[in-house]
Length: 375
Ligand SMILES: C[S@@+](CC[C@H](N)C(=O)[O-])C[C@H]1O[C@@H](n2cnc3c(N)ncnc32)[C@H](O)[C@@H]1O
Image 1 (cartoon, helix red, strand yellow):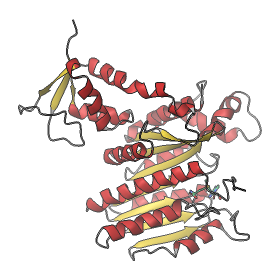
Image 2 (spheres, protein in one colour; image 1 turned 135 degrees about the vertical axis):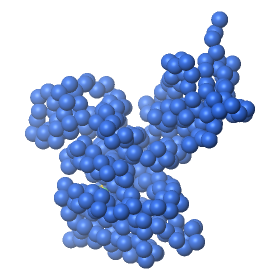
Image 3 (cartoon, rainbow, N blue to C red; image 1 turned 180 degrees about the vertical axis):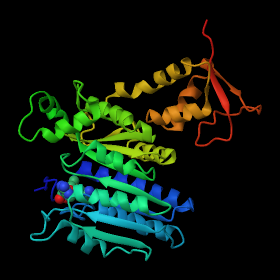
């Protein structure tokens, strides 16, 4: 019989989770490798799990080591200096009497690792280890860091911890939250409380203060959390993005991705759109679920027109950023514009002829888009 226990067998939605992580990591290594000034990259996988599951599926630590090895061999045998921390405080559910992290160490040792990649293994509580990780990145010159926070639950997670991880400006955070569970208990945790509800209440209070809204669905819950995280981290100029994983209605998870780096953010969107080419929004095991409801696909064009309408003109740089902030790639904005050429005009602000839309990262061109007046 098929093993459907998520603790010993990696289920399909978790595969999508580590696939997204792997895709992002390879892009992250490429960007930082080419940006010569980065002297060390830290990867902190603080809930690293079993390594390899009973169905032979690879967990996040193995995905990361594979990705580094691949980067090394595809880049003339070179990779940036990397330090990885694999941490997990749990005993294996697959092998009796063995810590999960010891399995990771054993399995990881079979994967080729360049000499300038250091790997350390810990069995600490997340709450104790994450401050040490923050300290290490902040004390290391010209360093960048990526936190991968993948608990089963959410009890150990506080929004303020995420803030602390991002404070130095050199780090990015992947945070996975069990949304269906949080959504189901949010209302009662806040209004009446029940045994064990305290962490959820504190989590929501930290983000929403005293006025916690009514959440209409797990997706609404994700959107409202995302919006509040943006406000919560506004002074640090952090981009926040989400990606939904859905096994069935009672198993909905969401990635919250945090970065201050616009290129990292754009690359994350590209990774999302490659995992979910039709919507860039998530991965659903049951393709019929509401996550893929067609009506949800149609919001962006009207937002874009409203954005153009709300000012005399918008520049190509503004349209680039607006697309990203709404979870869309330059190609989506370009497609909408191309299909509606009669609705607007484009003029050069730099005196040069205009031959395109120039909606791209750090474009050298400066052009303005203006809605044409409809009679
Ligand atoms: C969802 S699993 C991680 C899966 C892993 N990322 C993978 O891809 O295989 C969560 C892990 O967190 C560990 N864990 C739970 N609470 C923890 C805590 N407070 N500190 C450290 N590890 C914890 C559990 O033992 C479990 O292995």
